[in-house]
Image (tube, rainbow, N blue to C red):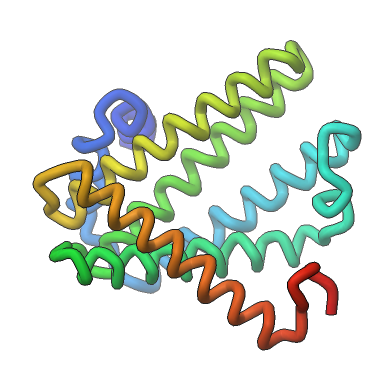
Length: 189
């Protein structure tokens, strides 16, 4: 089932979104899945940094795996909330759990891309950057397809608007949170 869903996510994102939504996962299961996905992504990211330090920005080299996992988890949670409210604003019908399930699944897809990129960095470093960049762009297309399907929109224009509103909401909420925690505009306390 997971292999087919992985392939469908790449080949037919709309159908993959339907499959994830059809699972009707409960809230605790989705949250546990998201927590696991963010931990695995943080581990993969840190391993990549350790294996290829010159390729990582200095800030990424200084961050702890736990902090990174928390940042991933918070940004996915807040991003999903922003997608939910942004979608409601323009007539979307998705529940928060539906969107969270889709975002969680995309985190496992992201993990696969990270692992593939890691292998490519060993075999062909120049190709790795190009491949991961293309995967990132295609990932945006998949996210648009997922949002369009979940929200019941009749056009990708609304899905793009939902994504833009969600991104603005994410940046706003994270900025407020960082300011509340005492971080200034430069990122230092």
